[in-house]
Each structure stands twice: as C-alpha cells, then as structure tokens.
Picture 1 (cartoon, rainbow, N blue to C red):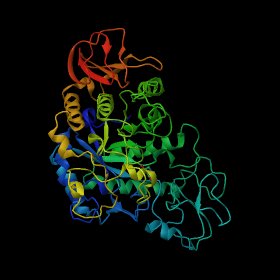
Picture 2 (picture 1 turned 90 degrees about the horizontal axis):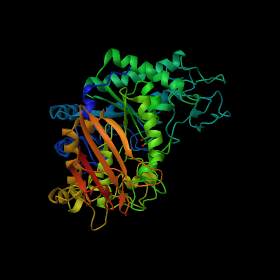
Picture 3 (picture 1 turned 180 degrees about the vertical axis):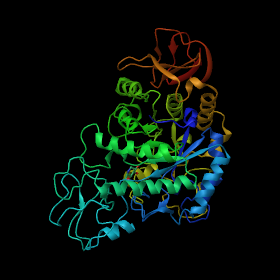
Picture 4 (picture 1 turned 90 degrees about the vertical axis):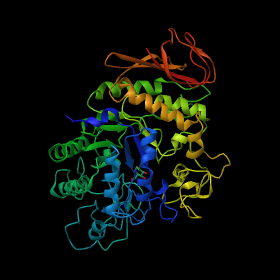
Length: 509
Ligand code: NOJ
C-alpha cells in the first residue's frame, strides 16, 4: 500500500522549467538563484509545491533529459549548494519540491556509458543494453552503432543520443537480453536508488519519474514487469524515505499506482482522454462546442474508481512537451479551463506561464532538442520591457514572444480581471474548501454525449460544491437549478437552470 504523504491532500504544483524561468546572472539562461528569487511569486499564486525539470549536468541534447552526471547540478544553473539552498528556501515557505528523475537513459557522455563502450569486460559492461555484435540490431528498439570499440549496438530509449539503462527484459529471448532479476539488471536498480538517496538526503521531497513504464523492455500489455519493478522501489522508499512523494510520467494510473506511485499524470500521449479536453481536433474546452466530455469522462471515471484513496490522478495545464493551453483560446476560454483544472480531484500541475496565458511560439528553430516543443519553452514573461524581467542578456537562449500583446505577470497583477488573478482566486477558493482538494469526492451531475455544459459535484465533510462549465459559445441549460452561493465565476452567472455562452461558475450548495 502506498502511504500517501499528508501534504498531497491539498498540494498544488507549479512546474519550473529551469532554463526558462528566471536568469540571475545575465547569461540568457535561467538558473537556481533565479528560481529562489521567484519562490514568493509561486507561493503567492497559491501553489505550495514545485516540480523542477532536470537540472543535472548534461550536454543538453534533450534539454537536460540526457543526464551526464546524476549527482551534479549543471554549472549553468549553479552548484549543488544552490540546489540545497533552493530546497531550504522552499521548505522555509512551507513548500515541497519534486525533482525530475530520469532513470531510463543517460547521455552518451555519462561516465557509465563511456566505460560501457570499452572492449574489455568491466563493471559497467551490462549497465546498458548491448547486442552481441555490431551486425545485430535491437529488435523493436533503435540502437547506437559504430561508436565504440566494443562489438555490439547499444539500445536507445528516446533520442539516438540517449542509450537505455539496462533493467533487463520481461521475456529474454536472445543471449544479450538479460532477465530483469539478473545481477546486472538489479545493479542498475540499485544505482538509481543511490541517485534517489543522494537528492533526498540533500532535501528533495520526491521525484517526477521520466518514462516510468518502460524501464524493463518488451513488457506485456498492462506493464506487469514494470509494475513489479516499481513495487521494489516502493519497498525501498517505505523503508528509507517514507515521506518521499512520487509522480510518474506513465499516463495509466491504475498501473502506476499499483506500482507504488502516489500520483500519475494524464498525458497528451497514450489514452486520448486528456487530449480530448484541450488538444484534440474538437476539444471539449473550445468555443466551437464540438467536443465530447465522455472522451474524457469514460477513462477518468474508470481510473478514479480503480485508484481512489490509493493515489492521485493529476491533470496538468500543460507541460514542456505539449503545445501551450493558450493555443486557440482567449483569456475567458482559459479561465474556464482553469475553473476545471483547479477544481478537479488529484493535485493540479500548472506549467510555468500558463497562469498568464503564455503562447506557443510558432516556427522557432529547435533549441536543445525541443523541436516543436521549443514553442512551449520560451522564457517566462515577468515584465513588459526588454528581457521581460527574465534576463538582462540581449540574447535569451530561446527567443521571446515578439507579439505586442505578449502577456506579462506585471500587467496582469494590476488587472483584477486578468487570467493571473482568476487563477489566484480559484486557488484561494480551493485552499479554503476541502471538497475541492485532492481527495474530495467527484460526481458528474450533468454530462451528455456531445453536449454542453459539464457540471459536477465535489464533496467532503458535509460540504457540497457544484462546478458548472460551459466553454461553448452558445447558451445551454441543465435539468436542475444551478443555485447557491457563487464562490467564483466567469462570464454571466448561471440563472435558474441556464448558463450563458462561455461561462463557468463554482457554486457552494
Ligand atoms: C519525457 C520528457 O518529458 C521529455 O521532455 C523527454 O524528451 C523524454 N521524456 C525523454 O527523456
């Protein structure tokens, strides 16, 4: 059983993409001192936890998801002492910090891989997956070939420069595929536990785990071997770090939570439920009103029933891998999206800049392996001036939003009708109402195939809150009264059983 750390009951996360958040030394790249300087902002927004994307030493061929040294902060971000200070400063403010753990692969210039490439048999020969000969490929997995003295191809995990760490195969059917409980595969696990110990000892409160479902290769449907692997990590954590919080990039909560994770993300890949909300051809959250809430609800309700009280399903506003929430939406549309995101069960995750409606920037040249994701990774827009308050450098590492009306924190803080203030208010409402927090009960009250609005109840300790969302640009009605005390709304408030076009309300019954 996963003992859920108590603070997850009302946790709200803010995702910091370190290179794009706040530059403190004028090199055009964000850093840890910058992150520390902005902790008060995150707290005042109403978030009490952060997820920091990889900050390890790296050649940055995949924005840091190509780790060169798991135990060293990338010099461009600062030092390990700065990381320690970041943890301390967050804790001093009552906040928690999850850092990214990338257990599936390293950079090619990680010492383990360099040693593993050698022709002689050594401690790291089996740390990665090598075929027996340069002429034998990796089956369904791509390989790195011809870069080593060693005779063999190394299986890669994501980009071609990210060799897969060896946790073994579910069904080894070639001599070079080792079983997941062989000594070499177990030693990879132990090496990763050692990395986890290092950061937990320094002050991290937990991890967001990259590509968590794919460590053991050629697993069966439902990932049973990877679930067992993570159960082993759970046993380790329960014993040594019972307070460590774990969230997976998995996307199938009934699997990941069975594996011992506390939280799982709904994601833009895998089951279409998350995409159907914001990023499909006809998303539910769109003025067009052509979405179908059941594309979300069918999967979500089943996942919720399978994981209730054991773990949290987290619906992020976005992340560094997908287009920005603001794509195709105006500020009112975004407020309706946030009314949903911040009143659902599980812990919300806000991607930096989404709270002001930062845009996906089209046509940027890829930076650090971002490709089309680069447009969602542009520097945070703090103030309307050269450098946007992000950097004093004339050349940020990713170009800024050049539009004249590029949103900024400074302007929105002054405007009581801004998206930023709507997010703040919604988070304040969530904070004062247990029904809206992670474990409050969730019950759809009006959800009809292909129709609008979507209305649901949230309940806890005798308190009942109704959330009514009509993203469509047309008036709609429900077969019951939407009355009660309005805690927050956008657009015209509901009248009787009617909702105005593009409106949303959070109502205390
Ligand atoms: C998922 C991460 O979120 C993404 O940014 C990265 O490129 C891949 N995993 C590979 O680590």
